[in-house]
Amino acid sequence: MFESVAAHFRETMPAVDFCSLRLVRETSQEITVRQGVLQPVRNQEDVGGMVVVHHGGGTGYAATSDLSPAGLAEATRRARGWAERSAGIAVVDYSAVPMPHPRGSYATPVQRPWESLPLSDKIALLQDLSTRLRSDDRIVDWEASLWFTRATSLYVTSGGGQTHQEHSLLVPGLSVAANDGADTVERSLGGRGYCRQGGLELLDAIDLGACAERIATQGLELLTAPDCPDQTCHLLLAPDQMMLQIHESIGHPLELDRILGDERNYAGTSFVTQDMFGSYQYGSELLNVTHDPSIGAQFASYAWDDDGVPASKEYIIRAGILERPLGSVVSQHRAGIAGVANARANGWNRPAIDRMANLNVEPGDQTLQELVGSVERGVYMESNTSWSIDDSRNKFQFGCEYGRLIEDGELTSVVRKPNYRGISATFWRNLVGTGDRASFEVLGTPYCGKGEPNQVIRVGHASPPCLFADIQVFGGA
Image 1 (cartoon, rainbow, N blue to C red):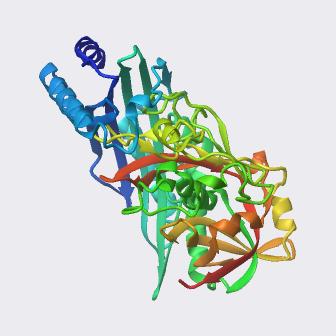
Image 2 (image 1 turned 45 degrees about the horizontal axis):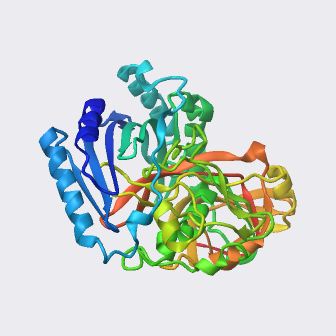
């Protein structure tokens, strides 16, 4: 269907400076077993297209779920109309933006397709995981789930560009709630952080059965554990909490449209300014951060962004120095700063804006045991459960599900409700240790919100465990 729609669009494109059509089809299936009971299986399909026009310095776009010739013509007419209305008054001279015209195709590498396992077998797997999660009567709520999405897109431009991309995305979920009298605690599989592109091979890679047993055990441990003590000490963050730390205090503040002020009336601004790039000491010399949509199995991988820019690995921060923003081709033209291929939309009915894709902390050379062994007094934390950060993405307070004290180079007592606070502009400069490749984990989230109207998009974050000095930690919140 997409090929015939694209062929008609090419034949009827208006005579403008630039025109593109992005067709998107997403199908998904979500299977959940809660407290041993199969919930209604959710199957969804969403199909439509977005037309973008640049002309006379203005820009316009229009989306439609009617992909007939008449529906496409109406969307094109509306997009051109908005481009003509904004000509001469737009913040950007869109006709001067060097829009690419790429050609090619991309597909997620898949070893075990989702369809290779019958629905009955997937349900049986979740039933087995549910049984493992309910290891004690004190576990009062428990859930196991699988969420699979296939996203297909076709992008066509007036300059002869055409790309086809197909993404297979899998999100496993495990969680328990344990109760003893007035105390209730929760433990999960990284807050749905173990999501990647690929097929059912992901389930083998993370060993869901062992994960279920570990989560249940740790949930029960938290019931009898004391609250995390209040102190200023070393903080060791597991990869599934580093994911949130990277996202909130590196990813969002470095989005170039945010730095330019486009988000300030909704999601806020940034403590980062344009003159910082190339010189600002964002973190210690151990901090190396890359934006890399070209990684095959990570959650937000692609070959081209939604403006057709080829994806490549780029250093955002190198040896602690801020090098470039997360800015797409339009924002780069506007600010005069090199960025990355990160124009992204969460579907056919949203315009592409500056978004994170795969934003990763590169591994160092210390084992997890060496990181722990270097600490006289500190706290180790896993799995985010709460977050708060100001509207310039600077001052923050984050809480985790599970913690352990580090005493004289050893992991000791379990503590619950571990929290920490800091300031982005100084927190990363206190980075004193990064885990090695063996401790590096590929994670992600389906739930990054931004834009008006709101867009909830998939993001990938990979990181080793990281050690920070002189951090305020506390418990009981």
